[in-house]
Length: 203
Image (tube, rainbow, N blue to C red; front, side):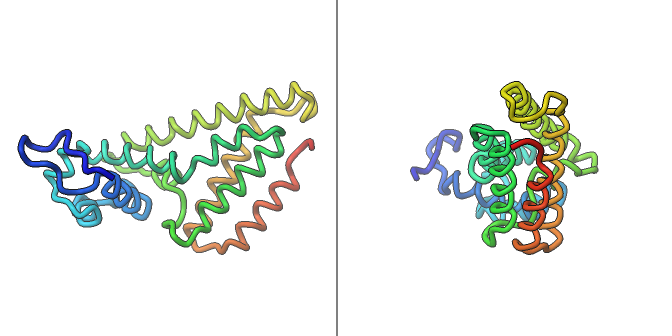
């Protein structure tokens, strides 16, 4: 990966890999949340100074948003990909098993970056909490639309509520994240997925 020197001071190319530094910041935010991640934590993990962080990424909020983009692109991409499943049950299966793989991977920090930060309560974190909630709402809207199409196609009975199904999947996903953060094993999370799929309506 070529080092990006676009915003470095003139005559002094940046001496670190932007992608690697962002990946390190993601792990800090994922492990500690936005509020819990101090600038010292971030610069130490990223291997850069505070001025270099500001020059490359902007402030802490801007860095978090870039880390969240990376998380959705590389870790949680299964959520949007699941919506392409040919059946609504296939959507649910891909979402739940994708979440299972994410939360039980030993290389990942515990829990879900978006769930952790959607419940942040400090004044400093309010801006990122709103951003995370907005992203979650966009995913939920995409689910509602997908399940409405499934209902129209006969995947469900006519009285099935697409919004309720979307909320159900979001709730299961959030519950898995919380339990994973509390130390649940993959086998325990897998039982939750299997039970949830038994409750899924239609075929």
